[in-house]
Length: 114
Image (tube, rainbow, N blue to C red; front, side):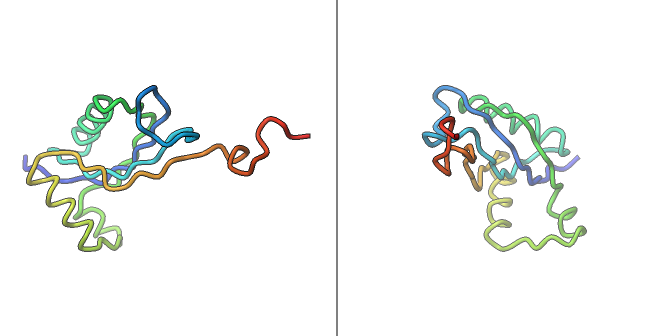
């Protein structure tokens, strides 16, 4: 079976040495991962993220490029280029990282709320 690239959204928690910003409680990562099927892409992505001292909690798969196009997703050229790179390198590309913050801490209300 030929390798394909799958789009994955990975939620990570905190772990010492994870490199996430101070104050973050976790993050969401958009990854492009190659694999013979989506299950393999998920396993490889989780393994790579653990090696990078991240703590994967949940992975949501959005399918291959063809599957995404069938579903009506718009896939810009920049995203396709990253997918091509993941396929050529048989790798996992982390394309975006959005940290999560505790809403109470962000609003400055923390534990000292009345």
